[in-house]
Length: 87
Image (cartoon, rainbow, N blue to C red):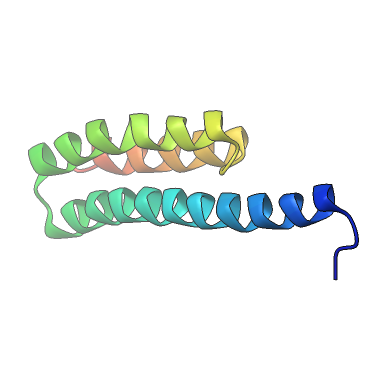
C-alpha cells in the first residue's frame, strides 16, 4: 500500500486513466468493427462511410497514446486496401 500522499494520488490517477484509456480503446474497436461488418456485407459505399468515421477515431487514439501510430497506420492501410478491392 502507498505510504505517501503523492503515491496515493498517483494510484487514484492511474486507475482513472486506465478506465478512460479502456473506454477509448473500446470505442476504437467498435468503429473498426463497423467497417469490418460493412466490408463483410459487401456494400462498398457503407464501408467507405464507416471508414471515414473510423479514421479520425483511430488517429485520436494515437494522439492520446492509446494506440501505437504504426498499429493505426497498419490497420487503416489494410482496411483501405480491402475496401478498394471490393470494386
